[in-house]
Amino acid sequence: MGKIPASFRTSMVPMANLLKNPPAALPNQSTVVEPPEKPLHFSKKKFQLSGKSKAKKTRTATESPKSPVFFNSPSLLDAKKIFAFITTTNPTPLDLRFHNAVLQSYSSIATVNDSISFLRHMTKSQPSFSPDRSTYHILLSQSCKSPDSDLSDVHQILNFMVTHGFTPDQVTTDIAVRSLCSADRGDDAIELVKELSFKHSPPDSFTYNFIIRYLCKTRSLSTVYNFIDELQNSFQLKPDLVTYTILIDNVCNGKNLREATRLLGVLGEAGFKPDCYVYNTIMKGYCIMDKGSEAIGVYNKMKEEGIEPDLVTYNTLIFGLSKSGRVKEAKKFLDIMAEMGHFPDAVTYTSMMNGLCREGNALGALALLEEMEAKGCSPNSCTYNTLLHGLCKLRMLERGIELYGVMKSGGMQLEKASYATFVRALCKEGRVAEAYEAFDYVVESKSFEDVTAYTTLESTLKWLRKAREQGLAA
Image 1 (cartoon, helix red, strand yellow):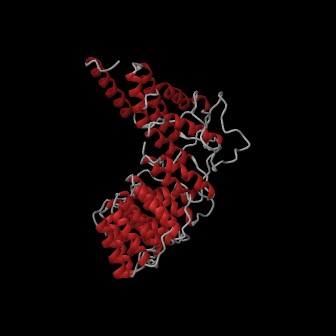
Image 2 (tube, rainbow, N blue to C red):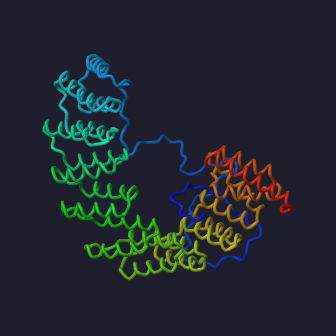
Image 3 (cartoon, one colour):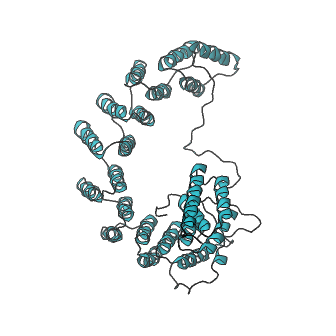
């Protein structure tokens, strides 16, 4: 339960009934958020998670429509017949977009050579059809995704483009690089970038940083550095602030904070000023390693440099401090972030609840949940899973069962850790039937793989049987 939640599905459920014997009220804080006019809680009759609207989903501007399927066979002869039928039976003139869609459909199942032949047939049979750069990019993308062990097909398409008056540009480079990387042909992408940089057009910053990010995920750090140096020395392509941020994020994920600090210095020497995102990335690295003091040091460095912390900064810091058992210090930053205009969200509160549970203060975590709702901040599935895990580990099974019931009524999914702890607690108390019911719910709600859920239950039952044989279980 110690990972920073990447995303949340909001689920708004009243939890005051869980706190039957609440501890002393927490001191008033400056993090009060005005409650919304409408109540945050759903009625008991009908529980619906927010974001699950039945409204018809609309396509965003960044989404491209799916290409229609015209062909089911890679046969070139069949493709020509189908194309002839389409063009002769359509009463209206067919535009460039339609011809590109036809070519896209056929190239997705045909060989590169057959796709070239089909394009030639299209231009010959339809004189009004004049291919543009986007037409050749369809073939280029296809050639990059072919299983060939070299770049012969790619070179064939690039030469085909040049022959027809289209010299590769930065868009061409971008399409080729992304297509090669999507086919896991990173070495070919590196080679092609160098070749196009020398012959035609170097990659723009978007393509450059895309391949850097790809290499960080798939290659060693030395390979990434060598690639950067070669592009800089041979083609004067220099890394920018985004590049350094990608590199710092990569080494922080690998817990190499010394290299992250070195890169921060290199970034400054290159004339760039670290922004909030860079500092947040380094702070995250320290938090992953439970180095709360170092994370606070990064925060102080930000302030000294005149970089204003954002909500992510405070959430990261509160997560790191809570995770390392410094909940009291984390609590102080709730006031600080509110004073700076950043109000705690579900990530903030869930991190602190996790820390309280780690300290053995489950009642404090439940009290924080009540405070969270009172201030208009809605808990989510991660919040409930964190509490369920903590309650069961601290042997507060009855409260855990109540919480589980709230989760079920809201249709929330169980996480693996909270499920395993819950099932183990139930079996330890001899409530095996309820453990099976929890297993059924995991399967029904598709929380995670059925095999994992069953294996967890089976291993728990074996443990229980062995413990009883040894006289260790009640």
